[in-house]
Amino acid sequence: MLKVENISTYYGQICALDNVSINIEEKEAVSVIGANGAGKSTLLKTIIGELRPKIGDIQIEGKSITHEKTYKLISRGMTLVPEGRHVFPLLSVWDNLLLGGYTLSHKERERRAEEVSEPFPILRERRNQLAGLLSGGEQQMLAIARAMMSNPKLLLLDEPSMGLSPKLVFEVYDKISELHQKGTTILLVDQNAEMAIDFCSRGYCLMAGRLVGEGTKTELKESEIVQRSYLG
Ligand SMILES: Nc1ncnc2c1ncn2[C@@H]1O[C@H](COP(=O)(O)OP(=O)(O)OP(=O)(O)O)[C@@H](O)[C@H]1O
Ligand SMILES: [Mg+2]
Image (tube, rainbow, N blue to C red; front, side, top):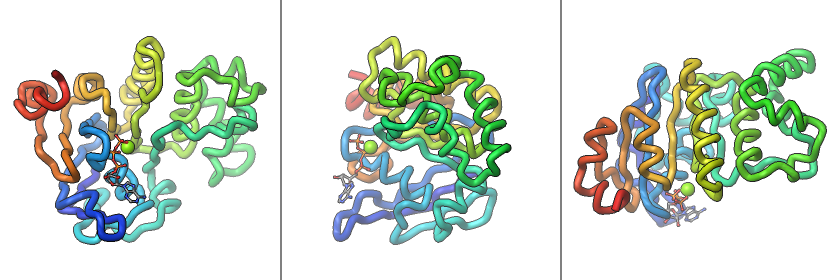
């Protein structure tokens, strides 16, 4: 479904991704783990077209999307839930949700909001409240539900558990799991390496912009570099 081939992404002179290749099959859940500054967010931003790789190619279903604009990628079925949630605190929960469907007609947007909020009863209960009053975990769920408004086939998640209590982390992962079971393909980045590895069937390990490991869940867990660096 998604193929990232030998990409290198720079911030000016700084090389943040160095010759990175990953691939994701339809309906898979794939993790990317790595320490602070390893290049995880850069990888997701490069895939969604917010950053351009200097070298390399990115393809969806065999077609190059390396130079495609972000809004086009969203309409082609890819969405990013960025690091740090980014809900609009002074807008209502429901208006935040509707914003995710900006490409839809008014009527379709309302219909879609009802549909995507179904797995998130808290968002329905509190639809008229300001989003800033939701707890961290609830805001994360709102950010995920909002991303689902564009009906993505591929959901890119950047640190969905960041800043959440262990209980909320499990709740958020439960919801992601529901979306995955309904057929959404998932690329998951999380500093909580154990959580991310366990959730996904396969994964990649980034270190200072380079891939240093990849494999199935079991292979990653048994890999010396992953154990030493991330699993203690
Ligand atoms: N806008 C920017 N300008 C310059 N350098 C940047 C910029 N954004 C990120 N970097 C650098 O690129 C490297 C990779 O950053 P990135 O945000 O992708 O890491 P990350 O793996 O997502 O880290 P974290 O776990 O802290 O979110 C880091 O060295 C970072 O300092
Ligand atoms: Mg990051």
